[in-house]
Image (cartoon, rainbow, N blue to C red; front, side, top):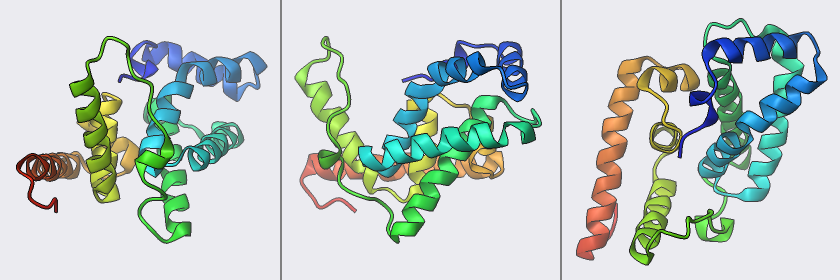
Length: 191
């Protein structure tokens, strides 16, 4: 899945931000339309619960509107938006005192393309389950990289760590996910 930030240029995004900062009521509708699907998808994958994700989604937009005046443009708006959402996800997880809320099975199914075959659907479900079992820091980088097509530099900006840390986490997370998949396929217990 790819988010809409690849569809809108940095210049168009900056123009939209200026409109938001000037209080243009049509700008908020436009920005929500552009980013609602990738943002909501990201939040659901992070917290694994649709009801909690909806609350975080709403709170993210409230914070965007409330703090748009402080957006300096050091990074793309989409990066800033995902930073806010990630912080809201982290706060929610901390307040509950655990890494995740419920299993992905309880969160419901993600939309599936009709042309996908049954094997791919089953594999995707296993990947989601294994992804949900990873530590939050590992899950963050994998979700941003592979579900939202963010570059290592963009991920670093979103999660607030150096690019080298992102590379390291991506490598470790990919290996952890691969080990879980291999353990499942061989029938031995997953780590």
